[in-house]
Image (tube, rainbow, N blue to C red; front, side):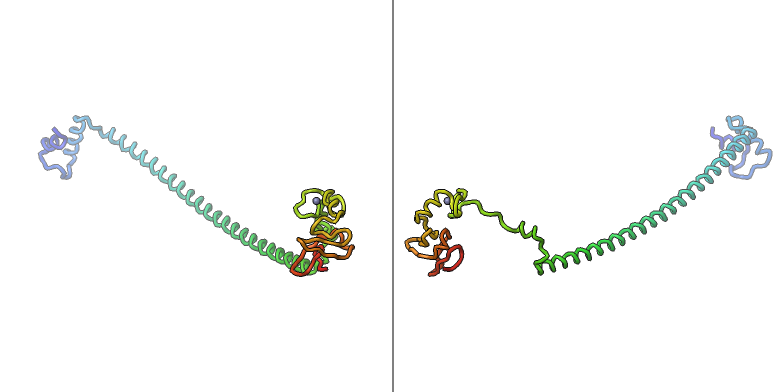
Length: 208
Ligand SMILES: [Zn+2]
């Protein structure tokens, strides 16, 4: 039998109506019979519930407090982040200024270089010496792999030149054979490399 059925059987009234004191006592008694708490126990339970509610309220306030602190911290963090952003922007602007200054310096240096290139005297003697190609040490007969010994010829070619049989070079007596043609030039040109360009004979690059 349910609690409601028990109550209806004892009271004889529909449930849900306001109960008078007698009926309230009856209800208490039925509740007790069915193992429900006594008024004292109910009161103790109520007190406990009130305590718990107080504790819960305290916890809720503490939670509110923590939430406020968290929000404050978040706000501060946002402010700091904004500061950091501002600093980064300032640093970026500084870098731009530096880059512009460097670009100006580079442009000035380029202008100086152009001036020096235009007026050659800026080149130092050392630079001129460096620019001078190393003295050739090979025999001046094209394609000859030997080191030169005398007059720019290797030993075998020097012998040929001395005998006047080295084609393409002015012999000691001033004659020079190119192909099947023979020419005669100043003996001062002896040893020079001769070549024909059209009708003109060149010795060491000079027309003769
Ligand atoms: Zn040679």
